[in-house]
Length: 142
Ligand code: SF4
View (cartoon, rainbow, N blue to C red):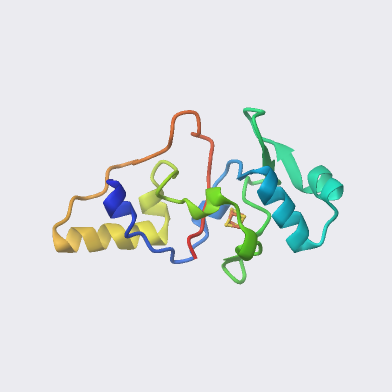
């Protein structure tokens, strides 16, 4: 899928990206912002709420046993870190996605349907997982 088409993506809060297995990488600034937002001392947040990403190049947020992000609130269908959520989360599906995302994600399905209806180019099967980031996941553009 082209960047122009992806830019028309609208999040429908299905939460599939948040529940997709894989690390949610966080930068130093994001860690500070999230720890502050949650009123958790930085050391405690680092120790109890982050883990080393698989490539050991950054930290990522803790996950559930199933690999979902612990900050996804299923009941409310929302991110508990909405105001400070990481850039990785905001960049779905434009800068990262997962194989078959457009069939899993409600926003992806809607976009595909809309594109089909107006004769635009259909989605590619898996548009843009950057090299070396295949294990990445998530976002929410709300
Ligand atoms: S938007 Fe990011 S931080 Fe928030 S629940 Fe989803 S994966 Fe977690």
